[in-house]
Length: 270
Image 1 (cartoon, rainbow, N blue to C red):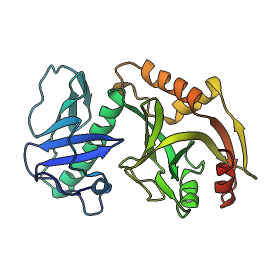
Image 2 (image 1 turned 90 degrees about the vertical axis):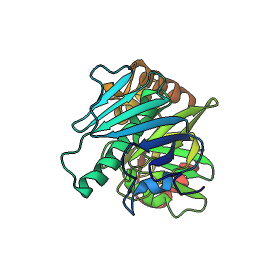
Image 3 (image 1 turned 30 degrees about the vertical axis):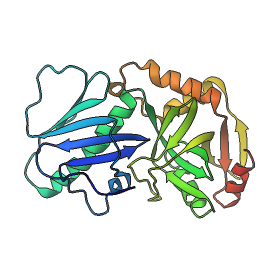
Image 4 (image 1 turned 45 degrees about the horizontal axis):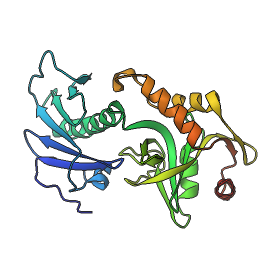
């Protein structure tokens, strides 16, 4: 994958196997040296085109999907293939510019993937274990970062992330993808893997797993997802997604001890 941009004004990012072209009306992209976005840069043909306007007044009555924050207004066409971002900076500080660039990139990409019905986002640790995708999700301090660190040195394993992941259905198969957001383990990947197991995790005195089905699995998925109303044209979408996901991918409650034994325990469930 070529990691150079096509021009100083255009940034192309591949997230969840969707390529975003983000074109700045003014100036060039100056991502921080250690920015996670460097790992998601691509020169592939874009699926989504976003134009960024700096200091330009947005239309007062826009058509399409609109998301507005303090300094940013994002407007997507109804098919989510094209969008405009209007940014008003509180000053000309370079630090503010760098921060604004990276924070709105995250917001625009997340809004597009979720709002278009291509994906949902979930608080989780994701692992690609030799082509098998495992998802470990739970509330803060349930062990997502701990599990990422336990898996990271195993042969054939890629930790996709331990903070926020994207879930997509592609060709009748659910996939788990890393995202441009680092968690406590500082582990991330732009890759994805077919999702084979979902685990709702908690610390325990021993390694134990029980199947979780029906509404209990759906509620647990929705609880850890990003169901903010302004992301969705229809709130039925995340519900339907989680219902089908829980029916198609085996789900478990997983209590675990923070040691390497839990890795072998999980592999033994497949």
